[in-house]
Amino acid sequence: MTDALLIIDMQTGLYDGPEKPYERERVLATINQLIQRARHSDTPIFVARHTGPAGSPIEAGSAPWQLWHGLHVDESRDLLFNKTRPSCFLGTDLQRQLSAAQVSQLVIVGMKTQFCIDTTCRVAMELGFQVVLPEDGHTCMDTVALKAEAIIEHHNATLAGPVVKRVKAMDVWN
Image 1: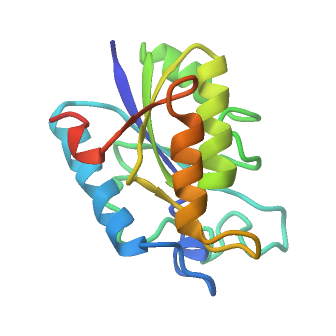
Image 2 (image 1 turned 120 degrees about the horizontal axis):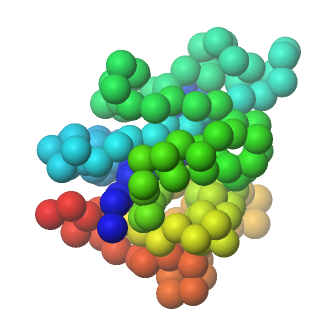
């Protein structure tokens, strides 16, 4: 089984916007540890950037659209791609690239839990990929209805079993 690490939407405008993600420093450190372990095991790394339309706060090339500077992504070796929907697959060539790399299992981390993490996990499973979700490797912001911590725990519990294999990040590639 060939793995890939998929990092979703760790961008300046989301990570350092007016509403800060829950436990953002810990999640960033967790993702950077996974990047380091992926590199050590020659696991390919795919990095999605959410891209808004021209004139939006996260239009391509804008400061908020950039990857968070503390994320240890190497643009010369990691595959960066843009997406415009919650799914990392819709309107991108991610599926083709994963197939070309013979990837069968995705480790999915990043932001936002209830949108892009949830949607990408479900679509990946529907496309036949095994999905590993580090329960401590994704985050979001509080909403009017729920605190981020509750959103994260709900999605970890809901996705576990039928959609993803729920693990702790420290157990991935160790």
